[in-house]
Length: 176
Image 1 (tube, rainbow, N blue to C red):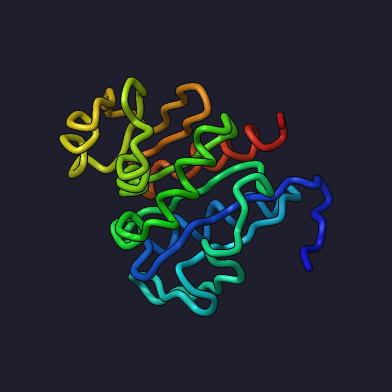
Image 2 (spheres, rainbow, N blue to C red):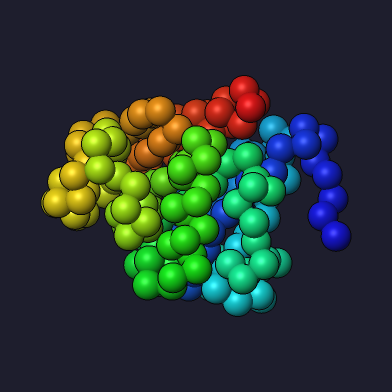
């Protein structure tokens, strides 16, 4: 059973072990404060540990989650995206969601999941500097800016970019 948020907006947060704590907790707080309902989707249900000790709980899995049920996809960074990118169902969920045209927000290493979903070709985005070559090799246009919005893509680089990233995702979901 899902409770409906005040705004009726639902956000899918895709998460795996070793996520960058603040890149998950900070945007989730901002979205919840804006009245959205956030659902953590994992490879299995239950607790997921971040790099620095945060623990978040996945209440849905990629087996059961339907991209059509959500208004925005949030992909936190850290070690989470490299765990998700080797999960076929996580990749399929991301690809289907992205192709729907609804907003997709990725920070730091989050773009790794977009690369594996084969959706970055011809798109302009940013990410942590270490994966800039991966973006270019996948046909994407990497730019080193705090916030890049290209169509339905909202991307940022590092935790220091969270204020503008959070503001942008709250705005994106408010406009839907």
